[in-house]
Image 1 (cartoon, rainbow, N blue to C red):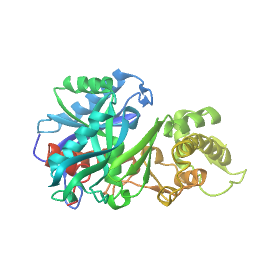
Image 2 (spheres, rainbow, N blue to C red):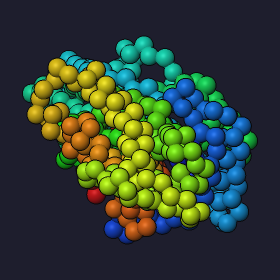
Image 3 (cartoon, helix red, strand yellow):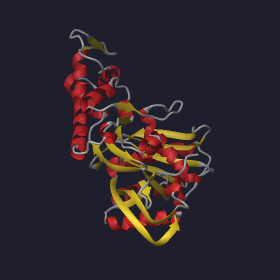
Image 4 (cartoon, rainbow, N blue to C red):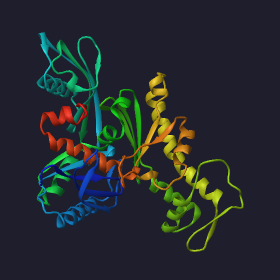
Length: 394
Protein backbone atom coordinates (compact mmCIF):
# COMPACT_ATOMS: atom_id res chain seq x y z
CA UNK A 1 0.00 0.00 0.00
CA UNK A 2 1.21 3.50 -0.75
CA UNK A 3 3.03 5.18 2.11
CA UNK A 4 0.89 6.87 4.74
CA UNK A 5 -2.34 5.36 3.43
CA UNK A 6 -4.28 2.82 5.43
CA UNK A 7 -7.16 0.44 4.76
CA UNK A 8 -9.92 0.10 7.35
CA UNK A 9 -13.06 -2.00 7.69
CA UNK A 10 -15.70 -0.46 9.93
CA UNK A 11 -18.23 -3.02 11.15
CA UNK A 12 -21.64 -1.65 12.14
CA UNK A 13 -24.72 -3.61 13.15
CA UNK A 14 -26.34 -3.38 9.70
CA UNK A 15 -23.58 -2.35 7.28
CA UNK A 16 -19.85 -2.51 6.66
CA UNK A 17 -17.61 0.21 5.23
CA UNK A 18 -14.24 -0.36 3.60
CA UNK A 19 -12.12 2.76 3.25
CA UNK A 20 -8.62 3.72 2.20
CA UNK A 21 -7.42 7.06 3.46
CA UNK A 22 -4.46 9.24 4.26
CA UNK A 23 -3.75 12.24 6.46
CA UNK A 24 -4.66 15.64 5.05
CA UNK A 25 -3.89 19.13 6.34
CA UNK A 26 -5.32 20.58 9.56
CA UNK A 27 -6.41 17.17 10.93
CA UNK A 28 -8.42 16.33 7.83
CA UNK A 29 -8.26 13.11 5.79
CA UNK A 30 -7.80 12.28 2.13
CA UNK A 31 -10.17 9.47 1.14
CA UNK A 32 -8.79 7.36 -1.70
CA UNK A 33 -11.55 4.76 -1.76
CA UNK A 34 -14.80 4.23 0.12
CA UNK A 35 -17.63 1.71 -0.18
CA UNK A 36 -20.48 0.79 2.17
CA UNK A 37 -22.83 -2.18 1.91
CA UNK A 38 -25.61 -3.57 4.09
CA UNK A 39 -25.81 -7.12 5.36
CA UNK A 40 -28.05 -9.08 7.76
CA UNK A 41 -26.39 -7.53 10.80
CA UNK A 42 -25.59 -8.74 14.29
CA UNK A 43 -27.07 -8.70 17.79
CA UNK A 44 -25.40 -9.00 21.16
CA UNK A 45 -25.37 -12.75 20.50
CA UNK A 46 -23.36 -12.50 17.28
CA UNK A 47 -23.87 -12.32 13.52
CA UNK A 48 -27.32 -13.16 12.21
CA UNK A 49 -25.86 -14.65 9.03
CA UNK A 50 -22.10 -15.05 8.64
CA UNK A 51 -22.33 -15.60 4.89
CA UNK A 52 -24.21 -12.32 4.51
CA UNK A 53 -21.42 -10.53 6.40
CA UNK A 54 -18.69 -12.29 4.41
CA UNK A 55 -20.33 -11.44 1.09
CA UNK A 56 -20.68 -7.78 2.09
CA UNK A 57 -16.99 -7.56 3.08
CA UNK A 58 -15.85 -9.21 -0.15
CA UNK A 59 -18.07 -6.84 -2.13
CA UNK A 60 -16.80 -3.61 -0.53
CA UNK A 61 -13.13 -4.67 -0.65
CA UNK A 62 -13.34 -5.71 -4.31
CA UNK A 63 -15.16 -2.49 -5.19
CA UNK A 64 -12.46 -0.29 -3.65
CA UNK A 65 -9.65 -2.41 -5.07
CA UNK A 66 -10.88 -1.90 -8.62
CA UNK A 67 -10.25 1.83 -8.41
CA UNK A 68 -7.13 1.83 -6.22
CA UNK A 69 -3.66 1.62 -7.75
CA UNK A 70 -1.75 0.53 -4.65
CA UNK A 71 -1.52 -2.84 -2.92
CA UNK A 72 -3.60 -3.62 0.18
CA UNK A 73 -1.58 -5.82 2.51
CA UNK A 74 -2.91 -4.73 5.90
CA UNK A 75 -6.36 -3.84 7.20
CA UNK A 76 -7.48 -2.24 10.47
CA UNK A 77 -10.79 -3.80 11.54
CA UNK A 78 -13.10 -2.18 14.07
CA UNK A 79 -14.47 -4.54 16.71
CA UNK A 80 -17.99 -3.59 17.87
CA UNK A 81 -18.77 -3.62 21.57
CA UNK A 82 -20.98 -6.70 21.07
CA UNK A 83 -17.83 -8.67 20.22
CA UNK A 84 -15.52 -7.06 22.80
CA UNK A 85 -14.93 -7.87 26.45
CA UNK A 86 -13.18 -5.22 28.55
CA UNK A 87 -11.22 -6.21 31.65
CA UNK A 88 -9.67 -3.62 33.97
CA UNK A 89 -6.89 -4.02 36.48
CA UNK A 90 -5.00 -1.81 38.89
CA UNK A 91 -1.43 -3.04 38.73
CA UNK A 92 1.96 -2.13 40.18
CA UNK A 93 5.51 -3.20 39.46
CA UNK A 94 8.46 -2.26 41.65
CA UNK A 95 12.18 -1.91 41.05
CA UNK A 96 15.10 -2.69 43.41
CA UNK A 97 16.07 0.99 43.39
CA UNK A 98 14.99 4.21 41.74
CA UNK A 99 15.30 4.24 37.97
CA UNK A 100 14.23 6.43 35.11
CA UNK A 101 11.05 5.08 33.52
CA UNK A 102 11.40 3.90 29.94
CA UNK A 103 9.05 2.49 27.33
CA UNK A 104 10.28 -1.00 28.26
CA UNK A 105 9.06 -0.48 31.85
CA UNK A 106 5.60 0.53 30.63
CA UNK A 107 5.54 -2.53 28.39
CA UNK A 108 6.49 -4.70 31.38
CA UNK A 109 3.63 -3.21 33.42
CA UNK A 110 1.09 -4.10 30.73
CA UNK A 111 2.51 -7.61 30.23
CA UNK A 112 2.60 -8.35 33.95
CA UNK A 113 -0.96 -7.11 34.43
CA UNK A 114 -2.22 -9.24 31.55
CA UNK A 115 -0.56 -12.34 32.98
CA UNK A 116 -2.46 -11.88 36.24
CA UNK A 117 -5.88 -11.39 34.64
CA UNK A 118 -6.52 -15.03 33.71
CA UNK A 119 -9.14 -13.83 31.19
CA UNK A 120 -10.38 -15.92 28.28
CA UNK A 121 -10.32 -14.85 24.65
CA UNK A 122 -7.70 -13.06 22.60
CA UNK A 123 -6.33 -9.74 23.87
CA UNK A 124 -6.23 -7.45 20.82
CA UNK A 125 -5.47 -4.16 22.56
CA UNK A 126 -4.65 -2.57 25.89
CA UNK A 127 -4.61 0.97 27.17
CA UNK A 128 -4.22 2.83 30.44
CA UNK A 129 -6.82 4.97 32.10
CA UNK A 130 -3.82 6.58 33.77
CA UNK A 131 -0.40 5.83 35.21
CA UNK A 132 1.12 6.79 38.55
CA UNK A 133 4.56 6.77 40.16
CA UNK A 134 5.51 6.56 43.81
CA UNK A 135 3.97 9.97 44.56
CA UNK A 136 0.53 8.72 43.32
CA UNK A 137 0.19 11.62 40.91
CA UNK A 138 -1.89 10.61 37.88
CA UNK A 139 -0.28 10.72 34.45
CA UNK A 140 -2.73 10.58 31.56
CA UNK A 141 0.03 11.07 28.98
CA UNK A 142 2.37 8.07 28.98
CA UNK A 143 5.26 10.07 27.48
CA UNK A 144 5.24 12.30 30.57
CA UNK A 145 6.50 9.28 32.54
CA UNK A 146 9.65 8.76 30.55
CA UNK A 147 12.79 9.80 32.37
CA UNK A 148 11.04 10.18 35.75
CA UNK A 149 13.01 8.54 38.59
CA UNK A 150 10.91 6.15 40.71
CA UNK A 151 10.94 2.75 42.37
CA UNK A 152 7.24 2.09 41.60
CA UNK A 153 5.21 2.17 38.40
CA UNK A 154 1.43 1.90 38.71
CA UNK A 155 -1.35 1.81 36.19
CA UNK A 156 -5.13 1.60 35.96
CA UNK A 157 -5.14 -0.66 32.94
CA UNK A 158 -7.78 -1.71 30.41
CA UNK A 159 -7.49 -4.87 28.29
CA UNK A 160 -9.71 -5.61 25.29
CA UNK A 161 -10.54 -9.20 24.37
CA UNK A 162 -12.35 -10.83 21.47
CA UNK A 163 -13.35 -14.47 21.15
CA UNK A 164 -11.16 -16.86 19.21
CA UNK A 165 -14.21 -17.58 17.04
CA UNK A 166 -14.54 -13.92 15.99
CA UNK A 167 -10.79 -13.66 15.41
CA UNK A 168 -10.74 -16.80 13.27
CA UNK A 169 -13.80 -15.78 11.25
CA UNK A 170 -12.51 -12.30 10.37
CA UNK A 171 -9.07 -13.73 9.57
CA UNK A 172 -10.68 -16.33 7.28
CA UNK A 173 -12.68 -13.68 5.42
CA UNK A 174 -9.59 -11.58 4.70
CA UNK A 175 -7.29 -14.49 3.92
CA UNK A 176 -9.76 -15.38 1.18
CA UNK A 177 -9.10 -11.89 -0.19
CA UNK A 178 -5.33 -12.38 0.00
CA UNK A 179 -4.93 -10.08 3.02
CA UNK A 180 -3.20 -11.71 5.98
CA UNK A 181 -2.22 -8.82 8.25
CA UNK A 182 -5.11 -7.59 10.40
CA UNK A 183 -5.08 -5.18 13.31
CA UNK A 184 -8.18 -5.30 15.50
CA UNK A 185 -9.27 -1.99 17.03
CA UNK A 186 -12.07 -1.77 19.65
CA UNK A 187 -14.57 0.60 18.09
CA UNK A 188 -15.63 2.23 21.34
CA UNK A 189 -12.02 2.99 22.29
CA UNK A 190 -11.26 4.49 18.87
CA UNK A 191 -14.35 6.71 19.07
CA UNK A 192 -13.57 7.78 22.63
CA UNK A 193 -10.05 8.68 21.60
CA UNK A 194 -11.11 10.62 18.51
CA UNK A 195 -14.39 12.25 19.56
CA UNK A 196 -13.63 13.21 23.17
CA UNK A 197 -10.74 15.64 23.83
CA UNK A 198 -8.07 14.26 26.15
CA UNK A 199 -8.64 16.92 28.79
CA UNK A 200 -12.31 15.95 28.96
CA UNK A 201 -11.35 12.30 29.35
CA UNK A 202 -9.38 13.11 32.47
CA UNK A 203 -12.74 12.83 34.20
CA UNK A 204 -15.53 10.33 33.54
CA UNK A 205 -17.22 10.49 30.14
CA UNK A 206 -20.17 8.39 28.99
CA UNK A 207 -20.34 7.58 25.28
CA UNK A 208 -23.60 6.23 23.83
CA UNK A 209 -23.19 4.82 20.31
CA UNK A 210 -26.67 4.38 18.82
CA UNK A 211 -26.61 1.96 15.90
CA UNK A 212 -29.22 0.40 13.66
CA UNK A 213 -29.72 -2.98 15.37
CA UNK A 214 -27.55 -2.55 18.47
CA UNK A 215 -26.39 0.31 20.65
CA UNK A 216 -23.62 0.49 23.24
CA UNK A 217 -22.80 2.54 26.30
CA UNK A 218 -19.14 2.96 27.25
CA UNK A 219 -17.66 4.55 30.35
CA UNK A 220 -14.49 6.38 29.38
CA UNK A 221 -11.80 7.51 31.80
CA UNK A 222 -8.42 8.81 30.73
CA UNK A 223 -7.21 6.69 27.84
CA UNK A 224 -9.19 3.59 28.72
CA UNK A 225 -12.66 2.11 28.86
CA UNK A 226 -13.83 1.36 32.40
CA UNK A 227 -16.81 -0.78 31.36
CA UNK A 228 -19.29 -1.03 28.54
CA UNK A 229 -22.47 -2.81 27.55
CA UNK A 230 -24.38 -3.47 24.34
CA UNK A 231 -28.16 -3.40 23.89
CA UNK A 232 -30.30 -4.97 21.17
CA UNK A 233 -32.10 -1.76 20.29
CA UNK A 234 -31.48 1.07 17.89
CA UNK A 235 -32.89 2.77 14.82
CA UNK A 236 -34.20 -0.53 13.48
CA UNK A 237 -36.23 -1.10 16.65
CA UNK A 238 -38.00 2.21 16.15
CA UNK A 239 -38.80 1.40 12.51
CA UNK A 240 -40.13 -2.01 13.54
CA UNK A 241 -42.48 -0.37 16.06
CA UNK A 242 -43.73 2.07 13.43
CA UNK A 243 -44.36 -0.74 10.95
CA UNK A 244 -46.30 -2.79 13.50
CA UNK A 245 -48.20 -0.05 15.31
CA UNK A 246 -49.00 2.17 12.33
CA UNK A 247 -49.56 -0.77 9.95
CA UNK A 248 -47.34 0.68 7.22
CA UNK A 249 -44.61 -0.51 4.85
CA UNK A 250 -40.92 -0.07 5.66
CA UNK A 251 -40.52 2.85 3.26
CA UNK A 252 -43.44 4.71 4.85
CA UNK A 253 -42.05 4.03 8.34
CA UNK A 254 -38.77 5.62 7.23
CA UNK A 255 -40.64 8.67 5.95
CA UNK A 256 -42.45 8.98 9.26
CA UNK A 257 -39.30 8.66 11.31
CA UNK A 258 -37.19 11.11 9.35
CA UNK A 259 -39.89 13.77 9.29
CA UNK A 260 -40.86 13.43 12.96
CA UNK A 261 -39.98 15.87 15.74
CA UNK A 262 -40.28 14.45 19.25
CA UNK A 263 -38.99 17.52 21.06
CA UNK A 264 -41.31 19.88 22.91
CA UNK A 265 -44.69 19.19 24.46
CA UNK A 266 -47.97 17.68 23.34
CA UNK A 267 -49.10 17.74 19.70
CA UNK A 268 -52.59 18.81 18.61
CA UNK A 269 -54.81 15.75 18.13
CA UNK A 270 -56.04 16.93 14.74
CA UNK A 271 -52.58 17.48 13.24
CA UNK A 272 -51.92 14.96 10.46
CA UNK A 273 -48.78 13.70 8.73
CA UNK A 274 -49.17 12.88 5.04
CA UNK A 275 -46.75 10.59 3.22
CA UNK A 276 -45.72 10.51 -0.41
CA UNK A 277 -48.42 7.93 -1.09
CA UNK A 278 -51.07 10.40 0.06
CA UNK A 279 -52.07 8.49 3.22
CA UNK A 280 -52.44 10.53 6.43
CA UNK A 281 -51.74 9.58 10.05
CA UNK A 282 -52.06 11.46 13.36
CA UNK A 283 -48.77 13.13 14.29
CA UNK A 284 -49.34 12.53 18.00
CA UNK A 285 -49.63 8.78 17.39
CA UNK A 286 -46.45 8.66 15.30
CA UNK A 287 -44.56 10.55 18.01
CA UNK A 288 -45.94 8.28 20.74
CA UNK A 289 -44.79 5.15 18.87
CA UNK A 290 -41.30 6.60 18.39
CA UNK A 291 -41.06 7.63 22.04
CA UNK A 292 -42.29 4.22 23.18
CA UNK A 293 -39.56 2.55 21.11
CA UNK A 294 -36.93 4.95 22.46
CA UNK A 295 -38.04 4.19 26.00
CA UNK A 296 -36.61 0.69 25.59
CA UNK A 297 -33.15 2.18 25.08
CA UNK A 298 -33.68 4.69 27.90
CA UNK A 299 -34.60 1.86 30.27
CA UNK A 300 -31.41 -0.01 29.35
CA UNK A 301 -29.36 3.11 30.05
CA UNK A 302 -31.07 3.71 33.40
CA UNK A 303 -30.50 0.07 34.37
CA UNK A 304 -26.81 0.45 33.47
CA UNK A 305 -26.36 3.48 35.72
CA UNK A 306 -28.44 1.91 38.49
CA UNK A 307 -26.37 -1.26 38.37
CA UNK A 308 -22.91 0.29 38.28
CA UNK A 309 -23.18 3.81 39.70
CA UNK A 310 -26.08 3.79 42.17
CA UNK A 311 -23.79 4.22 45.19
CA UNK A 312 -21.23 6.43 43.47
CA UNK A 313 -22.39 10.00 43.95
CA UNK A 314 -19.18 11.79 42.98
CA UNK A 315 -19.56 15.07 41.14
CA UNK A 316 -17.58 13.71 38.17
CA UNK A 317 -20.12 10.94 37.62
CA UNK A 318 -23.27 12.87 38.45
CA UNK A 319 -22.43 15.82 36.20
CA UNK A 320 -20.88 13.97 33.28
CA UNK A 321 -23.06 14.35 30.18
CA UNK A 322 -24.15 11.50 27.95
CA UNK A 323 -22.26 11.90 24.67
CA UNK A 324 -24.32 10.61 21.75
CA UNK A 325 -23.12 9.39 18.36
CA UNK A 326 -23.90 6.76 15.73
CA UNK A 327 -26.20 6.40 12.73
CA UNK A 328 -29.19 5.83 15.00
CA UNK A 329 -29.32 9.57 15.62
CA UNK A 330 -29.87 10.33 11.95
CA UNK A 331 -33.15 12.02 11.20
CA UNK A 332 -34.69 11.81 14.67
CA UNK A 333 -35.26 15.45 15.54
CA UNK A 334 -35.47 15.87 19.30
CA UNK A 335 -33.66 12.60 20.10
CA UNK A 336 -31.10 14.16 22.45
CA UNK A 337 -33.70 16.27 24.24
CA UNK A 338 -36.03 13.32 24.80
CA UNK A 339 -33.23 11.03 25.95
CA UNK A 340 -31.91 13.69 28.32
CA UNK A 341 -35.30 14.04 30.01
CA UNK A 342 -35.81 10.28 30.33
CA UNK A 343 -32.40 9.46 31.84
CA UNK A 344 -32.05 12.71 33.83
CA UNK A 345 -28.66 13.51 32.36
CA UNK A 346 -27.47 16.20 29.95
CA UNK A 347 -27.15 14.73 26.44
CA UNK A 348 -24.75 16.09 23.84
CA UNK A 349 -24.19 14.90 20.28
CA UNK A 350 -20.59 14.33 19.16
CA UNK A 351 -19.31 13.74 15.63
CA UNK A 352 -16.22 14.33 13.46
CA UNK A 353 -15.33 17.98 12.94
CA UNK A 354 -14.81 17.50 9.21
CA UNK A 355 -16.44 18.76 6.02
CA UNK A 356 -19.01 16.26 4.68
CA UNK A 357 -18.25 13.76 7.47
CA UNK A 358 -19.64 16.02 10.22
CA UNK A 359 -22.45 13.60 11.11
CA UNK A 360 -22.76 11.02 13.92
CA UNK A 361 -23.19 8.27 11.33
CA UNK A 362 -19.55 8.77 10.26
CA UNK A 363 -18.07 8.74 13.77
CA UNK A 364 -16.95 5.12 13.91
CA UNK A 365 -15.31 4.95 10.48
CA UNK A 366 -13.48 8.28 10.83
CA UNK A 367 -12.30 7.39 14.35
CA UNK A 368 -11.01 4.06 13.03
CA UNK A 369 -9.22 5.82 10.17
CA UNK A 370 -7.61 8.27 12.61
CA UNK A 371 -6.36 5.45 14.84
CA UNK A 372 -5.09 3.46 11.85
CA UNK A 373 -3.11 6.42 10.52
CA UNK A 374 -1.48 6.94 13.91
CA UNK A 375 -0.58 3.26 13.94
CA UNK A 376 0.78 3.37 10.40
CA UNK A 377 2.96 6.37 11.20
CA UNK A 378 4.81 4.67 14.03
CA UNK A 379 4.21 0.96 14.36
CA UNK A 380 5.25 -1.49 17.05
CA UNK A 381 5.20 -0.82 20.77
CA UNK A 382 5.23 2.95 20.36
CA UNK A 383 2.17 2.59 18.20
CA UNK A 384 0.38 0.59 20.85
CA UNK A 385 1.44 2.50 23.91
CA UNK A 386 2.30 6.05 22.98
CA UNK A 387 0.61 7.12 19.79
CA UNK A 388 -2.64 5.21 20.01
CA UNK A 389 -3.56 5.40 23.67
CA UNK A 390 -2.17 8.44 25.39
CA UNK A 391 0.87 9.79 23.60
CA UNK A 392 1.63 13.45 23.21
CA UNK A 393 -0.56 15.36 20.82
CA UNK A 394 1.10 16.91 17.80
